[in-house]
Amino acid sequence: MEASLNTPRGLGRAPHIIAALSVPVSEAGEIDFEVFARDLERTAGYGIEPAVLLDTYQINHCTLDDQVRGLETTREVMNGRAFTAGVYVEDEIRGDGIEDIIRAYQAKIEQLENRYGASPIVFQSERLKDADAATVVRVYEGLAEASRGGLKAFELSPVFAPNGWMFPDDALIEILAGEKWAGAKHSSLDPSMEWVLLRKVHRIGKMLYTGNDYDFASMIFNGSDALLGIATFMPDKFRALGDALRDGELARYHDLGNRMEFLGRVAFQPPVPAYKHSAAMVKKMRGWYPTDYVLPDNPLRRDEAHREALREALQNLDIPCA
Image (cartoon, rainbow, N blue to C red; front, side):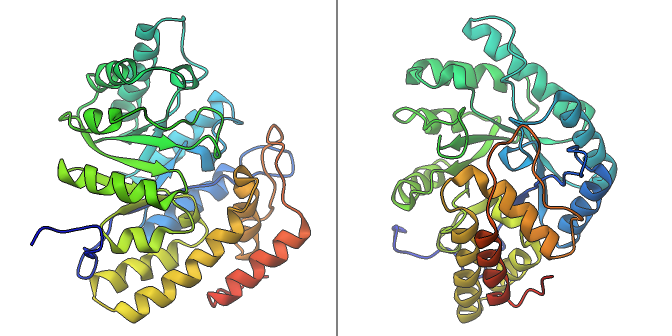
């Protein structure tokens, strides 16, 4: 019988889970790459693939040097193990034409793959926010020519970042049909939109990584993989969630998933981009970060009431916190 949207694909499957890593910020307002290295190793130690240079990394608030040092640190720590890295080109497009956008993407993809051994995920460019489907497809087909394969697209709602937008028409499906593409991450926080996209992506044999940070358990249960900012708050719990799915432990999966999603709803409440400060707060409470600052150029902060709400959500997950 043909699978429908109501047919679970979950039990017995080992989902691919990727955590978008946050960055620890020192009292001097700089990224602490020693602490970042420990966080990378911790994440990988749970069998969760790290992703760097995404919006969780505060990519639109850090310098090019911060990006390079992050990649160098990740390459050293991972030492041949898989990791994903964002292809962010907003500051690297030289010119106003479509070909200039393509060249910037191609250069960054070649750098990530050849110099750092990363699996690229392609950030959207604000330059394409109002472009039609044909133009978007042209850019993505052009940039893919520089890759050796395994690319991931990134559909990011503007609620997360100013360069985000939703792909026009079925442009994303047309792009993913290309041989260089492994799949896409979808971050809209709109489950109904994501359900429809999941089925379309699976029909062409590609992967959809849920980016819904507070409805991820149902998406994973029904066939999505995951690339999430909330996973950097609790890679240990995501390992346990994936194991429960693989082992067919239905009650354990749904109980743990519900409690994890509650933390996601607290952390990603409006204004959504302030979740980077939530991540720092949680990691400090867990003893993983010495501070809970964000980068100086990032204006969004959480208050003390939010910290206490995060603490309650952690306690609900039986996570010790200071």
